[in-house]
Structures are given as structure tokens and as C-alpha cells.
Image (cartoon, rainbow, N blue to C red; front, side, top):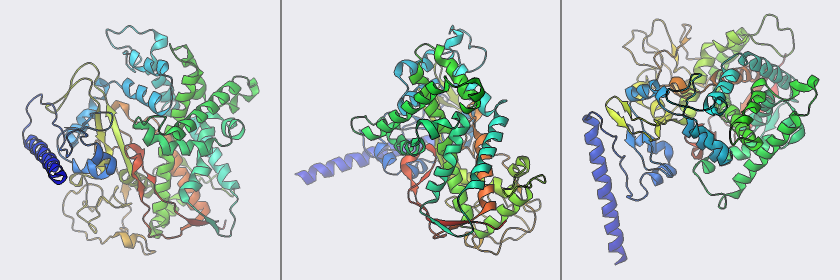
Length: 554
């Protein structure tokens, strides 16, 4: 009897899957004007796509790959996944028609513990993020939290404060690398990710908050911050506090430390103001006049900014250096480019780099872009608030959560060149993917037309001392990648911190490769990915990478 029941349930589930699959396939070829996207194929009627998504999110989103949007049934939400290059590009172009306030409320309250009365201010503000309020709205200037918060972030990372942040980070990093207690003898280290976290995170936090938060107020802040980062996927899925109290306790401790730092900063002397953090962090205190905001809200907002400035940047730095140090030929290219970027005025033992030159080096740029293509798995969200959004004939209803997934775009073979030079597939790291050659139209990220030049290239040879790179000087290009390469999102709501993140990754990579020799214990070992973080940004490693390090001769 039990066998019969199970067989019947299995048959019903299979039938349900076949029906939804057939509907989806039919809609791939015909799009009615104003048609709402279909539900994705699902095996279990009640839980929808949740089981498949939680079990293997990477494989799940790739299994949905198609040319049209689909609706999903996921834990806590039924979003619309926007797929197809033209659809993604249109979605980004319509970013101004979506309201980021709902995402801001969710992130502030759910992830970073902002009190509900404060986080609700985002959705109460319907005036938009522009300096001029949307027509028909009547929100007091002090309560225009979306615009005010946006302007603080924009000024910090895209406006007049950016050059100061870059200069300050550069100074902190040069000093750190110069005094790092590593000499000419090999030093064994248990994990490259832990090494970078320990050395770079305090600098990034000091850049924003000054030195007292991690050196005086809470010496365990960096350790607890990365423990909290490991809990972010769980907290983001609305896991209850009573089941997972540890993650919430760590978050509460971080917020309490930030509050103590905020209070202590208010009592410093005028000649110590440079110890209290950057201008943007000070400007955030002006948000205390927003209805519902207090120091708890400010501290939660601060935690969100600290997380955004560290989690993805350091993860990207890890994967990029991991790939460089396991490929001798790539390392040689990077070291040559870094040497070419050293300032002629640099006379110190620790070389100083001309940032403009460093940031324009082709192999550094291509390695950075390929790291983000291969390792960034982020959901880019949009929310049409009051009106339906129309994307190439598809009607996306108002109130829907819309998502584009970087993984789908970054792993879609029709968008990338995988046909030449060893047929470099998208499921490997290929540092030359974003490089082009003047006389070779097959080289680069897009397959264009057959070339008369023959070039042999494979991954194994890229790890040898014999460079298989072309004899011509390659150039980096990202032309035509709108909607294809999307680690920072797209449209008017792109990540504002990408310039600073690029400087931090490039400069740290340049100093490490120039000053030190780094040898992974097993260069051929593939480090697995922790898929629990899927959708939040750059992947985290699921295993340590032991290595040894020593300072290079001057």
C-alpha cells in the first residue's frame, strides 16, 4: 500500500513537471504582447523550485537558461528571473522606472538588523533617488531617505571624496606591506583567504571608520565580521533567530561595537577628527533627523556599508591572486605590467605605482574581468512599484521582484568566444578572455570571424614557464559587454563602489606580486566554491588554500 502511494505521488510530480515544462517550451517560440512570464518547470507542486535551488543554485539557474523571463517559486519569494540578452539590457535601461526602496528596506532590516521603524522609512519615501522629487509626491526634505542616502554613497564612491579614499587606502596598504613581518625565508601559511582577510580588512575598515573601531573599541571586530559574513546567506533566507541564534548574536555584537565607536567619535577633540573616519561616514549622522532613525539605525546602516566594502572586494582579490600564483606565465605577465607601472619618483624599498598606468594594464584588467565573470554569482534586483514594466513584449506586473542573474549571463555560450585557441569553455578561468589582437579577430571574448593567424593555447600551457600568449601586444576591451558582463549590475542602479574596489584589488595584487614570492602547496588543486553564498556576490572558497610566502630580493 505504501509503495502504491509513493508511486502515485511520484507520477503526479512527474506529470506536473512535464506540463509546466511543455508550457515553458511553447512560450519560448511565441510571445503574446503583454504576456506575463510563465512559471519555471518544477518537480514538486507545493515547494516549487525551492528544493532544486537550495540543493544546487548554480546548476538550477543554468538549467533555466532560455531567451525569455520565467517566474520562480523560491523560499520566501516568487521572483521573475529575467533572461535573454535583449531582455536583460532592456531591464537595465528601465532601472529608473523601478524603486530600489523595497530592496533597501529588506537589506537594511533583514541582513543588517536595522529596527523596523527605521527601515520602513525607505518604502514610506516614494519621491525617488533623484534630487528633484517625483511628480505627485509630497515627502518632507528631511524624510527623503532614498535620495539622501544615495547622495552620501555617491559622493563617497563616485564624487569628490573618491580621490581622497584612494589616496588614504594606498597609504595604508603601502605601510602594511612594507612592515609585514615576512623576510627572505619561506613562511608556511594555512590559508590564502585567511591571510588576505587578516591583512586587508582592517585597512578597508580604517579607511571608512578610522583606526579606533578595530584597534580600540573592538579588537575582535574583523574576526567577528567574517563570522557574520558566513551567516549572511542563512539570515538572508529569513531563517528565524531561535533556530540560528549564533548568526544574529554575532550581528548584534558588531552593531553594538559600531554604536560605541559612533559615541566615542562624537567626543574627540577637533585636532583628532581625522581619526574618526571619512567624511561620508560623518555625513551619515545627518540622517538622524529622518523619522524613526536613531543610533541603532545608523549603526545597522554602517554595518551594511562595511560589509559592502569588504565582502566582495576581498573575495575577488582572493580568487584573482589564487589564479595568478598557480599560473607561472600569467604571473610573469602581471609582474612585468606592475614593473612598468612603478612611479619614476619611487625611491623607497616599497615601490609606489602610478595608478593610472597600473589600472590600464591589459593582463591585470583581463584577469580582474575574468575573475568576476567566473566567480561572481549575484542576483541583480529591480522592483516596479506602481506600474507594470514591459520588457520586449513581456508584462512584468507592478509589485513583482525582478531578478537578473550574473551567472546566467556569464555562462551563456552564445554570448562568449569558446570556439578558438583550445576551445576555452566558460567553466574555466581563462585570463586572456578579455584581450584582443589587432590582426586576429578570433582572439577575445566575442567570436567574430575566422582568422588567418593560427595560435595554440591551452590552460595547462598557461601554467608553465613557456608563455603561449600571442607575440602581438594584446589590448583589453569590454566594448559591447552591456548586459553580458554584469558583476556590478547595470543601468542607473549600478554598484557605486566599483572604482574603489578595482583600485583596491589592483594595488594589492601589484604589491603582493612585486614584493613577495607566493607558492600554493598544490598549484593544480581546484578550490571548491561555497555555494551557500550564491546570489550575494563574489563566491567564497569552501576549502583552505595552504601556501608559503617570502619577500623577494630588493
